[in-house]
Amino acid sequence: MKGCDISIENVSKSFGTFHALDNVSLTINKGEFFSLLGPSGCGKTTLLRIIAGFESPDAGIVCFDGKNILEVAANKRQSNTVFQNYALFPHLSVYENIAFPLRLKKRPSKEIDQRVMEYLHLVQLDTHLQKKPNQLSGGQKQRVAIARALINEPSVLLLDEPLSALDAKLRSNLLMELDSIHDKIGITFIYVTHDQSEALSVSDRIAVMNQGKILQIGTPFEIYESPATQFVAKFIGETNLFDSSVVECIPSPNDEFMVTLNVPELGEKIKVTDYDETQIGQQVSFTVRPEKVRITLEEPPKTGKELNIFHGVVEEPIYSGFQSKFYVRLDNGILLKVFKQHQNYLEDGPEITWKDSVYVSWSANDGYIVEVINQ
Image (tube, rainbow, N blue to C red; front, side, top):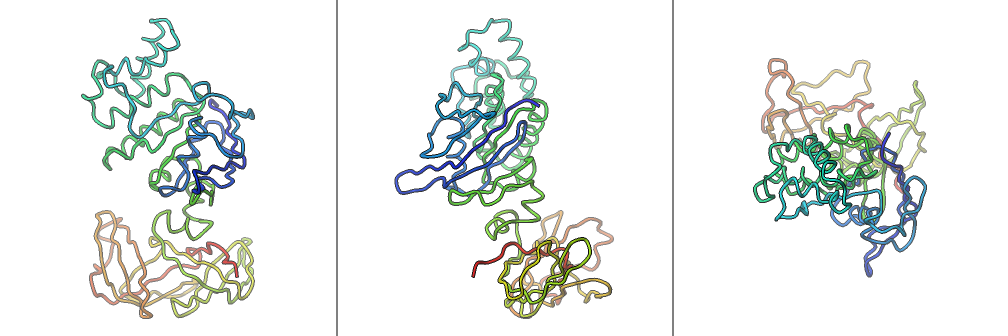
């Protein structure tokens, strides 16, 4: 495996009275595609700039393969950075932009030509080598920037919101190309983004950040299915989130517990499975993703299943091609989000429309206790 392991220990950084990073620690494995995900101002770009050497922390250390690199100048580190605004030289051709780092090192012309053509091919720009940046699309410019960053063969590639200036379709295509490049090169990628769909689609692991802190680190599956906090649950995708209290907690097979929650907003008790034993009376946060909720015109049978069933009226149906979103006003007044995937037109059942009387239901296995609320 190429690349290097990165260890960040107790890093803090302030700008005046603003605390950009607050005692941040994490480990990024060699060859990983690792994303720093969070809203604007959460500290992700500041952390990337500290790793790159463009900023110095107020406290803490950053290690590449166990060696503290904070005293190493940015241009001497084993990392290169790809920026949102491309940072290409407008007067140089695509070929010369990519060759620039090698010319600085005074490499032989034959070696420069061989390696530039290799990286032009990697980013699929073989036929554009003599064009100037102003003759390229946004996606092509970003691929030039990626090739220029990779030609020095760094151990770590740092990507600071590299796709945010592109339109949605181009962003999606280039993201897949970026993932393919990572698979071919095999070095450590650290990707900064505020877009949860980008992070979920390409990352090996994700660190979700907010207000200078890391709230959760995990695989895309772990982050989405098992959010550690209310913020993570709401920031990653869409969800239905409720405060509740534990009424009953009974051991069940597979090292699980069947938990009964009292959810004041829903006006009644619900069932949820959990791997942790919770105390009676404990205040917790409960979530169920909209795609886990089933919507039907008829009340579903409860045979053999721990189903949570509620009645309501469709307040807003939104057709999105591959799925429909329903905002259902339950009898108790709460608005519940439901997503229905369109898999087979003939098997979708009767069409559900505005003002329809419906039932929404979900299995106890599909809900999740997000976090215990401190009392």
